[in-house]
Picture (tube, rainbow, N blue to C red):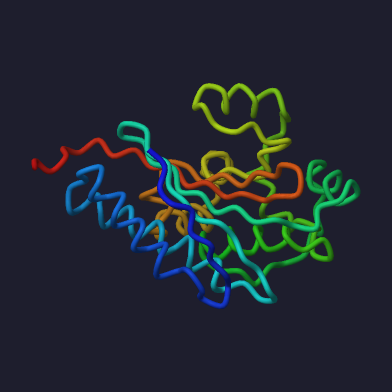
Length: 210
């Protein structure tokens, strides 16, 4: 199933409706109270990240659910051009220190940098989440999950987790992140003139009986 698409903005427009839509999805899929809270928390973090962005930004939010797997989408258009795309796909780094704190803070910062061509350089700290093997890996993973195939999956939470496992500071930050511990995966991808974030969550606990 696919929920209604809710248009949200960083001015707060549509966020209440997006959260209401999340509650309706949880009820429709008969999620337990705990799982419903987790799904709503992920939606709150995703839309809250949008609200925290500076400038004028808007995006479409929706949820897709297939059996026990839920995908929360946040998709927005960007002023993507060939030069910016090549810069992102080559994973060039600025080497600068970043002020973003926490896992969701870093994800918001990365999402913002992709949206804004003037801020396209990627801090070295984020490189752990980039895919070093390129499009074939992304295509295979996308087809296996029946996902849209992006021209690139720019960043993945699971790749980041695997890469920073030996870094005490980064790993402590991950362990303290509620979202990083609830979500099965968070991906940021680019396709045409759009940037999309997808949060994946599979609920294995029992459903509420009707």
